[in-house]
Length: 500
Image 1 (tube, rainbow, N blue to C red):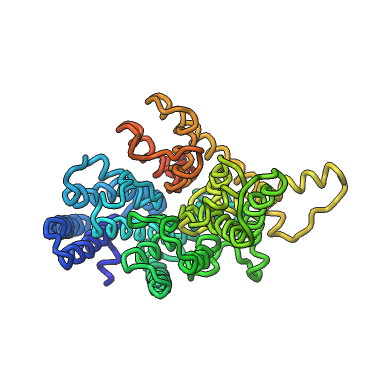
Image 2: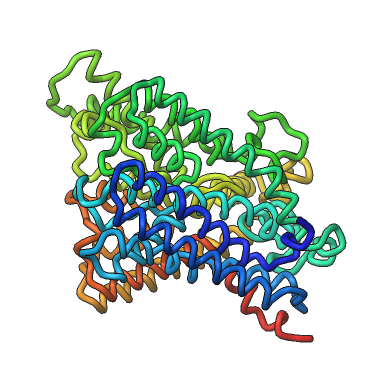
């Protein structure tokens, strides 16, 4: 085990991807789909052999700069793993291009959940299973890196409360505390049993609630990983309120790290209600559905329905709001009722804003993150107080002062980088004849890793499958940028890292 833990992270990622291929191979074999089974089995064996050869060749190598090496490994994983996972997928589907297969696997591994195969029967159940597994592993990859790599480097939102510059502060303490490989192994042992166990619990609960086996398993993996992947038919087409309530409860895992083992960056000895992420998420969860429901009366919308329709509309807006806040993207069966109740054809724009806010720090959710937006709002609130009472004292202790000062400054920098990235993606899409509104929605969907957002944000659903080849490449790179985050890439490319 010591020799295995000494291997580079990329070797581990390749090996796990190879082992994961045997799951759809076995599933297809049981179903009698021999061509699909052979595709995954042969590719899994070949990838295992290739991984073993690379492991032997790289044994004993050590990076001179472990921090930059592991940041580069994260970027390299998002560039390499989707290509490897696309090989058996492309072989099994048959009548599709490799670019489409690559985009599908990249969307799954970055937990975006954007699919090019819109028809429910376009893919076999084994291929839907493979999409769900890749997304589930991608979600765990995000959580593991957030705890073992990003947090010690003050990246991924930790910089808002750490009080140190992102990318290089606390690096010496990180290396002195434990070898980076040891940190990965340590947190893997702590996180994976909890991650897999919670997935199994939700899977079993969904089975009891009446969901079919593959659907229950896919929804469980899609919820824990925030990938929003479903096997052809989503929740809006299979109305089971009990299943939605179960998934709604597990969305909390993407709001705060408190419910998972490992490093808890926002706890600081506080109880759960004083956690800023939970309080801010609760505020958004109350505000958005209330605005949709109250407009029925304020806007004098003529929509038939009694108390039952009101409850259905309220639940649909609550579930869908939290789903897109966590960048999962599941749409409730009551969402269309909520849209009709509000009378807004463009009510999906609220979901677009929620996806931009994103989930908690150190979770699998994408977006700007709740903590960064909270820091900017607290700073704005304090500035307003100073305008009214220039001699007032902010108070709140060291944590509140850090949030309002350096934390807000770093959060604002990230917001500007996020907006700049979205603008560049939109302009690049415009070069390939993508209109403004679809370019905006697609860019935000990719950057926040919320693929289902494209079908609900506008008045007319935008299909990923209708985009051109160059546009898919741009959107794929935008997904990687949204998942790795601009600050991490800047820390990787910083000139200070080049000096020896």
